[in-house]
Each structure stands twice: as structure tokens, then as C-alpha cells.
Length: 396
Image (tube, rainbow, N blue to C red; front, side, top):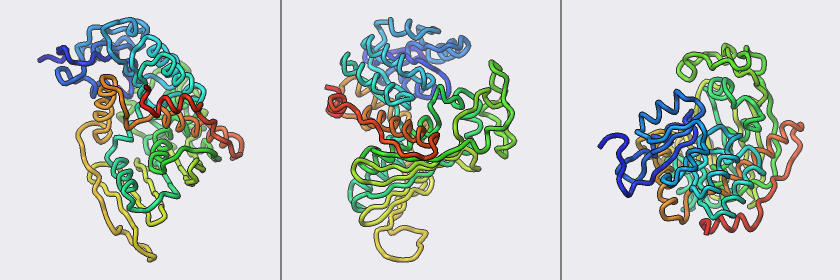
């Protein structure tokens, strides 16, 4: 069977946007095993023709509307820049195409609500790509909390060390707040969603501090200049040695965020884009213990301390290995696309949640307003009750 072959039972998928998240298209292309990429849309002609040839797609177009007009396409993956999600997702929903929107759902709470309202009005299925809910480390922590290993969660601390931040987020459109709101939304949407999942609630009130501590004064490219050769293949060190940043750099490269959740849990999140290492660290403290991840990849550990009191103990009372899986992001990209395909076919409950996706954006937006207002607290706008109920019952 060649790369472009499909069988009658394959779900025909169209992919809009083939940039940094093209690995989603790779995960979705399983001809003869349930789904196949049959159409691609991208503004870059070289990219769309190369990817169309790789997948054996029958349609390669520079206008996503042309893709949505194809009646043979069963579902759509949207992996375009964040500021385009609202328009593309709503057009896909109105065209009756079940749609996967890569995180974040939007760049404001209102843009998310517009997408949710459109999905509700049209009855077309909406799925949001918070793939970290499918990562082994997150699933393991969630399972340990659910079975009561640390009692009832009351505090969550999350730290995100982003060693490649100056390359991934300050050399392209991510550095422009008009297109992202800020990295406390764009980059943190995953982590806020994980905090909500582990804590069992959504953020109600936030305050935050942050600044552009390193990348604000480094050399930038002239407007319209292509990204440097070797981008995302060669990395400069130390961070102050980085050159050829995006011509607009007005998002913060370091931030701290405090959250009060609707179930009383207190949480804190920290993000830094000029650390020497790249990983996430979550600590959850409950009424009967705490757990913490040491590394976030296969073979790393989640440690649980639930006896005491005692002094410092490097090993937990129980140490659990993070399970491994093949594929990008610890196998989570494969699992999330499989869930999307199943959801398109059958509907029903999913591990990801459009409600939680919206709430993570709303929390990140409110926190960004706070840090740009000297740390003043802001309430997170609630989601309309009817929309919440519709999505929580499986979009029925």
C-alpha cells in the first residue's frame, strides 16, 4: 500500500497549517488503519506541495476555504498561528466539518467563546488539541491523585523551564502580542490546563508579574526578513548571544502567576524562556501527602510522599516510573489524534475538553492583563452556563 492509498473506512482528513505542528498530520496519516490525510492547505507553496507529495494528498491549496468546500473531506485539523484559529475554526464548523483546533483554542476568552457558540449553534463536533492530557507523566499523576494517594488536592505548583525559548518563541510570530496576547497564554495554556486537571477545578481569580528580561534588547531582523538559516536546528548559547529575533518582540520572557480556583485550590505557575534546560515540574500537595514529577519523559519518575512528618527525603514513599510510548511528545500526539478520529466517528466523552481549553485561555488572558497592570488581581470571566452544559454532556 502506498502513502496515498486509503480504504473505504478511512476518515478523510484535511490539514490546515503545516508549520511547527505538522507532526499532527503525520500522526493522522494512517491509511488503511482508520484515517488518511487527503488534503492540505498552507500559505507557503513549497510547504504545501512538499507535504501533499509526502502524504499522497489529492488537494494542495493556498486557501483553506477551498479545502472546506471539498465534500469528500470528513474532518479538519487546524494547526495555523493562534490569531487565525477563530476564523478558520468557525468557518469549518459552519461548513459542517468536525474540527480539531491546536492549542490554544483562541487568543482571548471572547474568541474562544465565539468558537464554542458556533459549534453549539451548528451542532458540528469541536475538539481541542491539549495533547499534554495524553502525556504519560500527566496521566500517571492524575491517576495517583484520583485514587487518593495524597488525599484531596489543595495546592499545585508548576514550573516551566524553556531552554529553547529564545529560538522557538522570539524568532517568529510568537513574539508579537497581537498574534498571541502573550506567552503566559500561548505557552502556558497547556500547563494551566494540566493544573486545572490535577486540581479538579478552574481558575476563578489571578494575579501575575512578568517582564521582558533578556530578549528585549537583542538584535532583531528587519520586517519581512526570512527566519535565519538553521532556525530550530542550531541554537545559540548563552541566551544573550541570540541574534536575528523577530522584528516585533513585545511579549514577556519570564512570568509568575498565582491562581485561586473555583474549588478553593491555590495554584502557582512560573515560566522562563532563558533557562539552560527544558522541562516541566509539577508539585501537587493534598490533605494527606504530595507528589512531584522528576522529569517528564518516559522512564522518569513521579514520587509520592504520604507519610511523615519528617525532614527532607529525596526518595518518596512510592516512586512511579513514567510509562513510555512511541511517537512525538511521548506518544501523546498519536493518542490525541486517535481520540479525535474516534470522536468524529462516534462522539461521546473525550479526555480533552473544550470547556477546559477555554478556561485555560481565559485564565492566561486575565493573568497577562494583571502582569501588564502591575500585578493587579483580575477575575476570570465565567463561561455561559448553557455552553458549559452542552460541552460537558458530550456536545449532544
